[in-house]
Length: 191
Image (cartoon, rainbow, N blue to C red; front, side, top):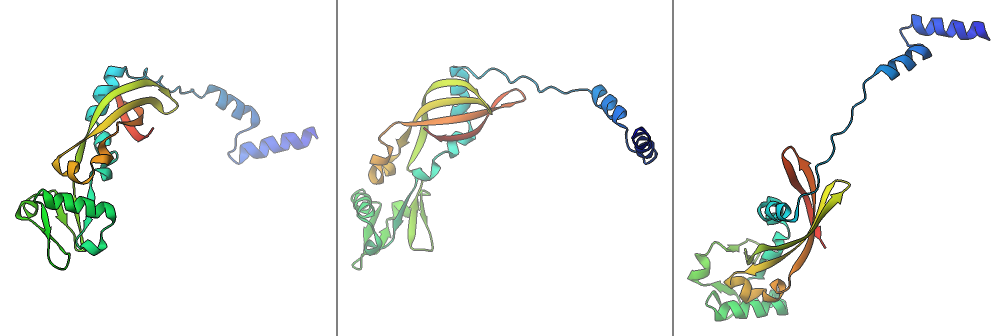
């Protein structure tokens, strides 16, 4: 048995492999690397400043700042009809005798009205977001977790077509990751 073990060691060394003793020695002498310690989570004030100017906050929930209006009354839902009637009363559109939507000069010259080829007009933006307050900031396995409240500030079109959508304050949670000099927003989710 000892002869077989010795022969295996010789063959292993001859073929360029490492012997068990060499492997143990090599493993023991390799330097170990340590991960740098994560910075402490940002303060409430630091998180407020970071989130208020983060592009991720600007993009978060952006589709809720738009309204798609069918260009024929027959294709409108009750909510779309209500919005169209409010827009008509405010002088943004009218209807022809067949119930087709006719945009006023005011709407045609306003970049917020985007007429699409599929029979819809998108009205965007209806509102902008405003950060209200950071509620908490603490550690997270990915870096830091910040909970905050925000609200929509509707413009005059938002007041006409989707006022209820913008009435309530909102809550969200941001996950932050360390970035060379501080923190960066990884993602924002509801709640």
